[in-house]
Length: 174
Image 1 (cartoon, one colour):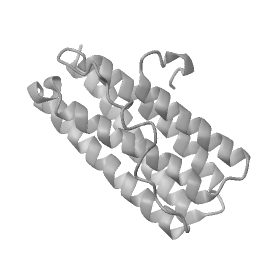
Image 2: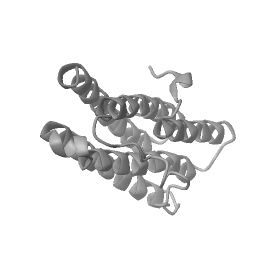
Image 3: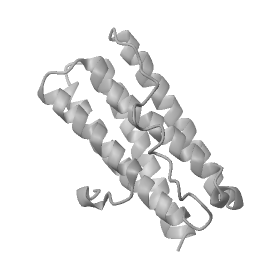
């Protein structure tokens, strides 16, 4: 899977890893279910913004296949965000659409022409971290079949995103 030490300047991965650690701490301390789901929703918000940014970046606009793939993944992430928000509400929580401290860090300031392979590598690492977050949350919610089914469904989508990113990196960017 992803390497813990591979964060470097990848603030996107760093933020996703911090959200995972937050969720792990909350699970260990008996955190509220809605709050746990909020950590996943925050990761989805960052992903929506990140994939949307790449779709309209210089590289994205010059590579229709990249723009199309990133726009599709942004739409998937937006759907995940909406489903998580719905479940948070059902559990008595209030979804927070302001992913604190992520609003400026998920974007790569250097997202200019020629950095697409690096951005996609960063996204791949972050997706792998998110998959692990969903696995952990799914196990934690074993006694709540509705929430567990939602988390498992989202994890399956994230695994598809990972596969798509690996394909892009192997076939299109070599």
